[in-house]
Amino acid sequence: MLRGMTRSLVVKATAGADAPERCSQAFTVAATAVAGGVPTSLWLTGESAWFALPGRAETFELAHAAPLADLLDSILAGGTVTLCTQCAARRGIGPEDVIPGVRIAGAAVFVEEALQDDAQALVY
Image (cartoon, rainbow, N blue to C red; front, side, top):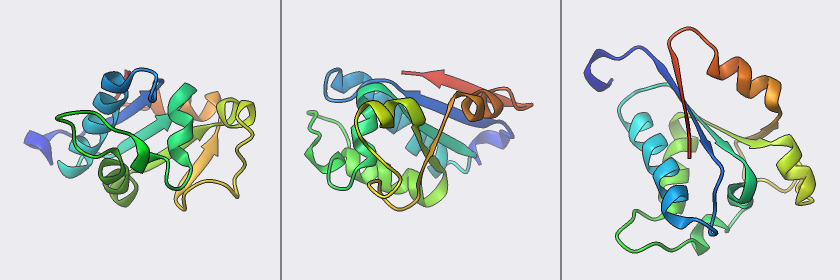
């Protein structure tokens, strides 16, 4: 675990290909936390919602950044990935459409995670 940290991290990604640097930062921070043993939850909201679909992360490109698909795989392997309920509905995405391991949940679950004792929430 990163230097004895016992806090959990909740990262909300609000951007996708529309703001690639912000999107990449959210995924990079979440993947780094997972790699460091930090309990991590990544929320896909807004345009990042599309990355809950198979093959979409593979289409993301940003120079000098780790491949988004690799970052997502590492987060799924060691953390939690959640697609916002409203964001999914607005894009016609259902539970049967998402990558295995991605759940769909709403604001109440986000608030519950973000307000846990010793949790840190970041929004990108």
